[in-house]
Every structure is written in C-alpha cells, then in structure tokens.
Figure 1 (cartoon, rainbow, N blue to C red):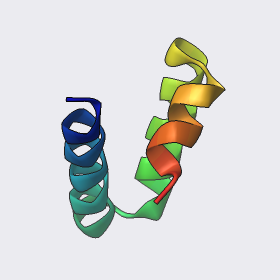
Figure 2: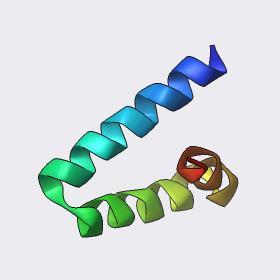
Figure 3: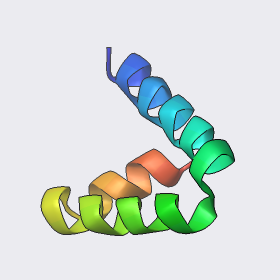
Length: 47
C-alpha cells in the first residue's frame, strides 16, 4: 500500500514537473516539507 501511494505521488510530481516546471515542483516540495516534515519529502524524492 505504501509503495502505491509513493508511486502515485512521484508520478504526479513528474507530470507537474513536465507541465509546470522544476521551480514550481521545488516550491511545492519545500511547502510540503514544512507541513509534513523533511523526512516525508526525502522519502518522496528518493527516486
């Protein structure tokens, strides 16, 4: 289950990176890091 959630989030980030650009995704990850914690962001970014 955890792997499916992780892959879904990573897939959405890749799509957003293509459509909206790297800067937007980096800002979004920074914002998520403030809310959920840096460990969550590191867990998602570990590609």
